[in-house]
Amino acid sequence: MATDSSNGDHQKAGKQPPLPSPLRFSKFFQANMRILVTGGAGFIGSHLVDRLMENEKNEVIVADNFFTGSKDNLKKWIGHPRFELIRHDVTEQLLVEVDQIYHLACPASPIFYKYNPVKTIKTNVIGTLNMLGLAKRVGARILLTSTSEVYGDPLIHPQPESYWGNVNPIGVRSCYDEGKRVAETLMFDYHTQHGIEIRIARIFNTYGPRMNIDDGRVVSNFIAQAIRGEPLTVQVPGTRTRSFCYVSDMVDGLIRLMEGENTGPINIGNPGEFTMIELAENVKELINSTVEIKMIENTPDDPRQRKPDIAKAKELLGWEPKVKLRDGLPLMEEDFRLRLGVAKKN
Ligand SMILES: NC(=O)c1ccc[n+]([C@@H]2O[C@H](COP(=O)([O-])OP(=O)(O)OC[C@H]3O[C@@H](n4cnc5c(N)ncnc54)[C@H](O)[C@@H]3O)[C@@H](O)[C@H]2O)c1
Ligand SMILES: O=c1ccn([C@@H]2O[C@H](COP(=O)(O)OP(=O)(O)O[C@H]3OC[C@@H](O)[C@H](O)[C@H]3O)[C@@H](O)[C@H]2O)c(=O)[nH]1
Image (cartoon, rainbow, N blue to C red; front, side, top):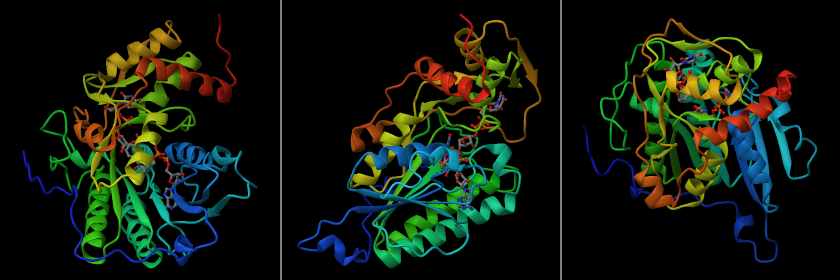
């Protein structure tokens, strides 16, 4: 294991950050905080927007190309005076005046990020470069949603931030995991070279309401299958593990990271670890005990195990997840039943 203690945390920039807008220092007028959320029409992004909009001092701008996201996720904010939605692809430049940038834009489900791998890596590399260029011009603080996938198929378990990972650079997942690794590198290079204030969250598998029904990720697949009375498709061997974080906990962690003093990278995830068979059994028990569990083929390079070490998040952000898997699944079930139009039988 590589244990370089200078792995990003508290790294001191060589340069002073660019000055934020003069409005920030205006004597007589308390400006609202302008916040850009890229990928804000997606699953995590739209929950983040909900939370940011609760604060009346925030103006929120969402930039999204709607590849996996949808206006529907933001419908309650469209037309609100503190909210703006822009159809924009982050691989192109964006000129807006903001104080903070939450940079989430990137398809997250393997079936979507593998669909057009060249576009995925462009989104991660050129998209992150563009957002860093914007942060540099306007003096904004920028947070990147990186991923547990930077640890690849991890040989250290659970994964601390100091672990450098075990990633296949030319595999079918590389457009995403190597893309995010480059995005992290760009964040630190802009921080060191230009003094940009950066924050990096390494997000572990997150679930909750508003995931696309056809998203393809395991929790949304199993819940939709259980509600429809279809077999739960467990990919072989069924002993792969993941640790699932409910979306409200995730949003709380992201905001704490943005508002805190630490650059990260910081793992944000729920350390409760489950095999895919265990997950299927939980879904079966909670949602529909009549469905069967069906073993199906897996995809290449599927990480064998994943569980976050969240000691840093606890210590530096005062954060830990509150929602257990067995409490989060029924909350997601409610939303899926509404969207699928299938009521629960008593
Ligand atoms: N959900 C998870 O389990 C998880 C885990 C680790 C990291 N993350 C990261 O969190 C972020 C959000 O994930 P999510 O689960 O909400 O995914 P999502 O697919 O629901 O949301 C991604 C959003 O980004 C938009 N987008 C994609 N490419 C874009 C582009 N080129 N320009 C502008 N918009 C673009 C999509 O339309 C969508 O609204 C992603 O960066 C993802 O890598 C998520
Ligand atoms: O129907 C399914 C779907 C998936 N799976 C299994 O469930 C596990 C999790 O797969 P998912 O597709 O949900 O997500 P992964 O953990 O592979 O990737 C995710 O990791 C973190 C994020 O960056 C992204 O959201 C995504 O890349 C895998 O072992 C997969 O083989 C099933 O058993 N059945």
